[in-house]
Image 1 (cartoon, rainbow, N blue to C red):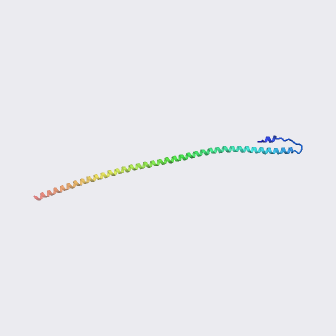
Image 2 (image 1 turned 60 degrees about the vertical axis):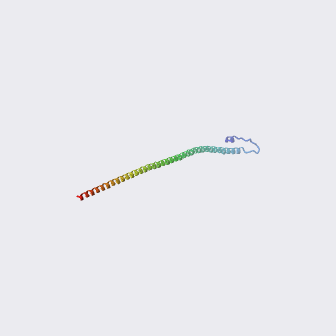
Image 3 (image 1 turned 180 degrees about the vertical axis):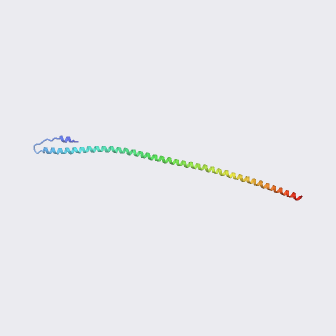
Length: 153
């Protein structure tokens, strides 16, 4: 690739007859040199900008990758928290069901005990009632016997 210095140092053989004007050729070469130098500077600036943009792109890709990893970690953490909460809720429900079952069994046991106690009291009352009837009957018989004995006198 030609450099501006190559263009500047380029010399042409001079011909005496029907040759180009040396001054015009030199002016034209100077103009080409300036344009070529400007083009090379622009190319260098563009390459520098491209490299900077590539570096920024890599930086942003790194940030994106980090953010994606963080997002995945946050999603996993949210899932874990959700699963733990679900397990805790299920455990609470199971504990509540167990406690309810125990309380129900305790109350059923108390009901059975009270029914048995009631039956025992009813039996005791029936026995007491029978004893009282028997006592009253015996007292009535005694009074009848006493009345019979009074009428004999």
